[in-house]
Amino acid sequence: MASVDDKKSSVPFPMPVVHHNAGGWGPLPSNLPQQFVDMPYAPFGRGDRLGRSADFTQLNQYRREAAENRKYRGRGDVENQKNEEFQYKFDAVEDQSFHLVDKVSQKKTSGFQQGFKRSYRGRGRGRGNFNNSGRSGQTYRGGQQGGQRGRGTGRDKRDTNPKIDRQSSVKIGADWTLIEQFDLAQLTKLSTKIPDAEDLVWAGELAIYNDIFDRCSTKHPIPLQRMDNAEFYYVTTTDDPAMEKFAKENAADVYGTDAILSLLMASPRSVYPWDIVVQKIDGALVFDKRDTATFDFLTVSETSHEPPTEAPGLYEDDRLSPEQLAVQRAAQSKDPKLMEINSPSKLSIEATMINQNFSQQILRSDLPRNKLELPNPFATTDNTENSGPQPAAVAYRYRKFKLGDRTLISRTELHGIAEKRGEKLYMTAYALNEWDSRLAGGIDWRQKIDSQRGAVLATELKNNSCKLARWTAQSVLAGADQMKIGYVSRVSRANPYDHLILATQFYKPKEFANQITLNINNMWGIMKMLIDLLFSKEDGKFVIVRDANKPIVRIFSVPINTFKDDDDDDSDDNQADNDDNDSSDED
Image 1 (cartoon, one colour):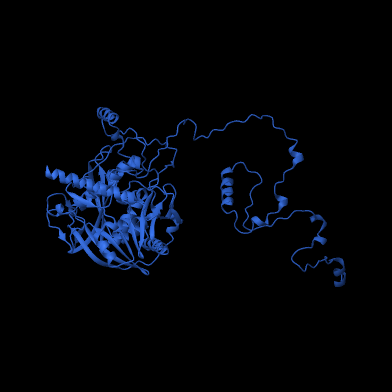
Image 2: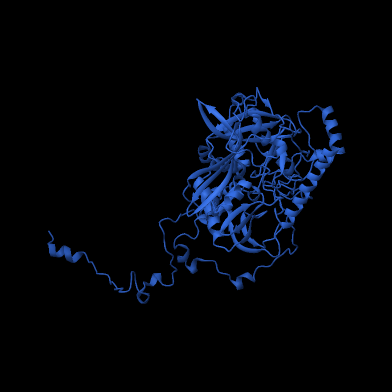
């Protein structure tokens, strides 16, 4: 038996040489093992994915992995730790051994361009120009107007995002000075506390809501009537006598109407161009509109992926017989105006008239109106003496808001009184209209609105996000208890004059704002930012302009006499109209 000493001597264990590295980890460059000399080194990360060196059966998987690598590129310090020894290096000597055999260049044609020799992209102006341009103090009857346009927007189905070049809502003058510019996306990050409201004056009249419209459906629709005897007023801030009185009393720091303020509050959702005039006079801000501004007209499919264009085309209704189609083609070829019913300008006028008629038709005419503190401030003597068209049943509610260190007075509108469980609730009323679901990228209301009204509203929110946000902002400003939304559709796709009320729905404004992801704090945050910015400037005139083709808002400082010619022209037109009326009365 071997002893312990013999076992120890039979198992040799030489001690390795360990070089001390006082400045870090690992061997020093002077004492590297011979087998590792000149070998490149790259850091290894646990998150690195080890793939196969060659695998031609799973190309899609490697494409996904390559996309993920591009997605996470630049994160961490992995990119900075790349070793140059592992990167591709160009070898000039090796490159000289290759020779190009065929030097004829071949013209490549994209698959999306094959077979298309012409460009069919429609061009439009957004809302376009109107004869009834929404001048201050101008009234609009409830009758409907419109032309006709045809089927075929001129777009190819594969052109999923056609470019539409719109024109600015106002011509930028050479003497205008740009003082501020920001993206619309930046406005969505603003927020402030919701201000408290105080009622100052009530004016106008209110009627009771007719609850028979709660029961209308596609099986029992209600025809939309034309309120030819009702007049609507779109008076700007500086032409409002009540606002002028408040300004003389220095009752607030900021003045504006709900139509102007709601446009600014919903501006991040806007697509069409617009402009607002702001005057700073004696330390007070007045938000105003130009006499030729058109934003009082409602937009249609403004935020749609395929908005309507001004490009005309032949329109055919698939529900017509061949004989009727032949008659329609002949009529359209004789009258070019019949080919424009689906242009932005005609759709805007049609939607505005529908909204006016709907807001008055849903009120009870068999009951007397509730007269408020003051009469309608914009009605003329002829209107009040029942000798002509009567003012629409609208209440003007002047409210004061405490917005930080500033006070704001706004003229808001209410459209009726809804009686529920013995309680009277103030309401606003608006109407969504269906013009052609095939061209609007929507769904057929007659098939879905009774059973899937939520889907219809979701589609409208996608196509008319800015318009719904403006309505909600106006209802919040007015302090409405309920907001009535009507769904109005054409009797036929080719008839822009006759409409049916298919459904109605009540919403609470604040709950509806949450439903359409409209942040009320953000609405007031936008106003506070603009007010603070303009108060930091000297007295003068400013114009807030939304770019026609980019989501950018610019604020210009303009000469004090800017747009004065428009005011003079408007005064001349009004004087001419009055002279014509006087002469007709004498005859």
